[in-house]
Image 1 (tube, one colour):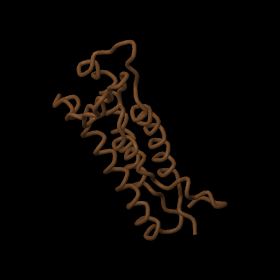
Image 2 (spheres, helix red, strand yellow):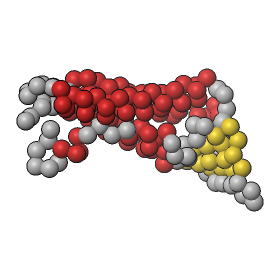
Image 3 (cartoon, rainbow, N blue to C red):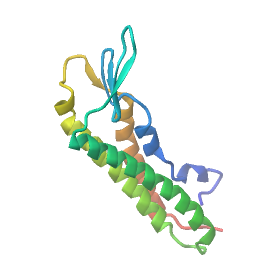
Image 4 (tube, rainbow, N blue to C red):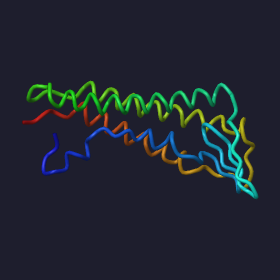
Length: 155
């Protein structure tokens, strides 16, 4: 693993989970939209199911796949940690981490291009923190996967 006590930095993290669970992919005043529901705050906080557009369902699928690939990467890392011989590389862990990053990127890219089909843009409309986290999770997962492909097991 890593040396000098910093090996925990290289552990695969389900960073895509932080992108799929929170709310606020799109914010417009008292209106918040995420992948699963639209919420309006005012006198009464009300949430309705999100649209059933095909593009939105593909974004949802990409985010779910990224969580699955990240969790698989974590479990595979621990399995490979105990089964790999000295000098072996963490190829399988790296591949699943890269797949998780590509799924996050695909979902965020689809959302970026198509969100105006769902909610009309206005001056007050801005991207929420979950959308920003998606674009941050993509390069981190990709870099983590590349590091795993390069990483060799030490005793």
